[in-house]
Length: 157
Image 1: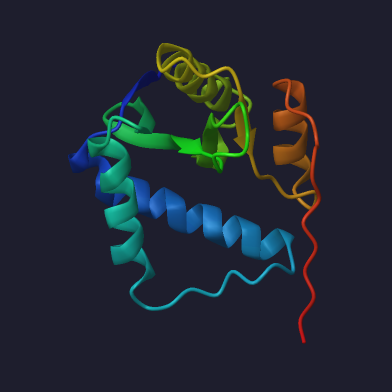
Image 2: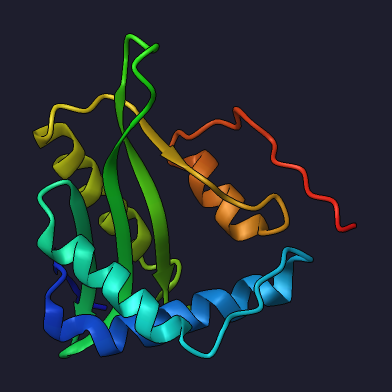
């Protein structure tokens, strides 16, 4: 199956929003983590996506096949407080690939494109949050060389 990896465009926003909704639904199925969204969430997320397209410190990448966006990836350069020697790092916010395109190398190609962008920005450290309740995602990140460094706990009161 042929696909293209390219920088995200503002015109991709409607398609990427649909993929983001699918990502949220996917996480709702997997986890007890609170994924309930407000009605305005798609509009707010659209602005978030547009920031990633426009900002030189943010990155939006899409996978496209036959004129259809089949996956996306969002990341950015972030900073830690001044007390750290290594202050800047890259962070991955979102990635999602349509079910019918999984196991075709699309997520790896998106990650590779992001990694190239990160290196161009002079970064040598990337973080990503992933759920231990998502075995496919967990496997993907581990297979891609990411290691578990922190565990986030939650408790409803």
